[in-house]
Image 1 (tube, helix red, strand yellow):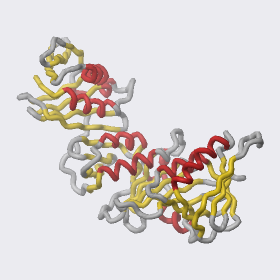
Image 2 (image 1 turned 120 degrees about the horizontal axis):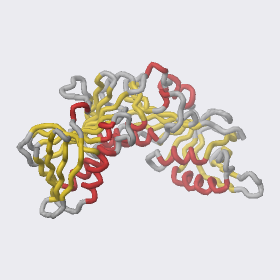
Image 3 (image 1 turned 30 degrees about the horizontal axis):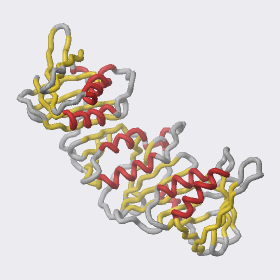
Image 4 (image 1 turned 180 degrees about the horizontal axis):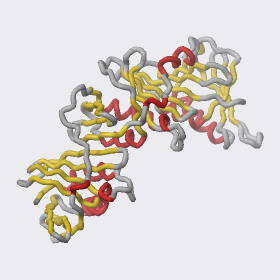
Length: 378
């Protein structure tokens, strides 16, 4: 087999494929790229115990066949080469498989010892019925934000990913929690009905390789969930939903979205959090929230009690008075930075209860964002 391919787009594709490969995999072939050549069409596969990625590349060739190449060696060689085009050829003999790589127009030649592709298992997801379409930009933004709310070490496997299902209104709901914070994104106006599932965090990171523009087709095939934009296809094993991910839509607004809230400028609150973080207790990063009729007074002090920071921000208060509660400065900052718009609504449920935070209004993409943050005892 002989292939000629542009180096730069090939290097970009290999970088995406390489990002999901696990070092020192229990299956040695999974440390390789799997190539499927059909004349001028080349599919690049990589996989791990959890994920499979498929990328399409346009090439010059008259051959058909499959081959594998050690991923790290090929990726680093292509990445570091300075040329416009690369030629690949595959030699098979009783001694094994050799991949010849040459920089076109340069005296640069490389040989990479490889394996036979017979044992490299791939999942085919062709011609699936029941696929749904979602904007790539919306999907990537939601999963990127949601994955920030997942705890790295979590004994409950169900909580190590992002929950995806229809809420009580039939809208598409993405939820994530680390036990202290919880995020919820609801995409409205889509006629998408989906079986509940939990997408692992590592899969959410891999989905960032999809294109920023255009649409993503999504569908479920057995224990796999598949995302494809026509150039990149990512299939991920799902976490068993039967473990009982909390049904957020049942209690979210009834329990935590009270009729009373404050409306406050988001940027002013973010700026205050930055300074309060300097003064807050290093263990709990506690900031006190003192609610007045038309203001929010914020206070933080370190363990020594000899220093203190206080700031007062004007706000619209629809009914919270004489209220004092404590929240983690860094966690609150993460929530605020995930919200669009100039203002933010905060519903306080009680001195020792979570605060419910949401955007002032639904954003232009029809996505509503809301968050919970646990209170800290003062």
